[in-house]
Length: 216
Image (cartoon, rainbow, N blue to C red; front, side, top):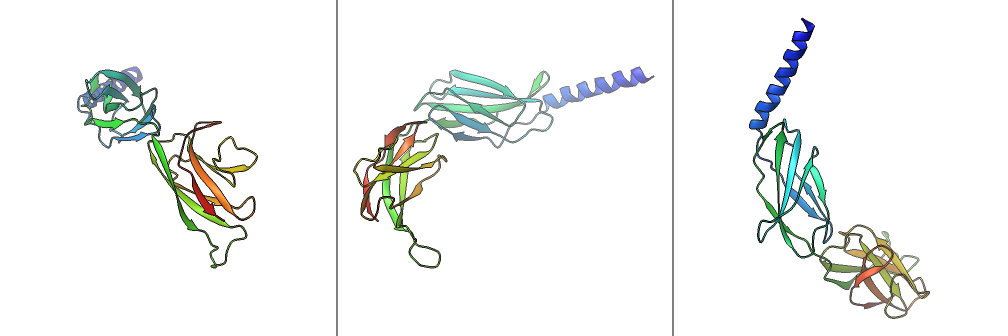
C-alpha cells in the first residue's frame, strides 16, 4: 500500500510539472546591465513552476546565434561579446519537455570607453562652514562608454600626471564604474595642481581625460 502511494505521488508530481510546463507564461521583467565592452548581466522576473531558463543572444543585424545559456537562476552573465555590436537578448522558461514563450527581445550595444571629459566642480568646506585643514576641490567627469574596473584620479604640480604614478604624482582609485566625481587635495603644499582621470584597466590606465588645472 505504501509503495502504491509512493508511485502515485511521484506520477502526480511529474504530471503536474508536465502540465505546468505547457502553461508556463512568457518571461517578463527583462533587464540588461552592460558591464564592459565584452560583458553583460541579464536579469528577469521568476516564472512559477519553471525549472530552468534559456537565455538566447543573437546579433541584431542578421539574427545569427551568438550564445545560448541555461540556468536555474533569474540572472546570468554573458562574456566574450565584441565591442560596438548590437545584440538581441531574450529568455524563456523551461520545465521537463515543455517551455514557455520567449520574452520580448531587448537590444543592447556594447561599447568601450571612447572618451572622458574632466571639469572642476566646487571647493569643499567643512559642515560648519570652516575651511578644511587641507585645501580640497571636487572634480567631475563624463564618460562615453563604460569603464569596467572604474577610474584612477591622478593629480600633481607637474603637468601630465599618470598612473602608475611618478614621484611627483598622487592618485585616488574609484572602483565603481558609475563614479563620475572625485576629490583632490594639496598633498604638496598650496599652488596649482594638474588633474586627469583615466579608465582603469588593472595595474595600468587606458584612456585619459583632458587635463585641467586647479588652484589649492
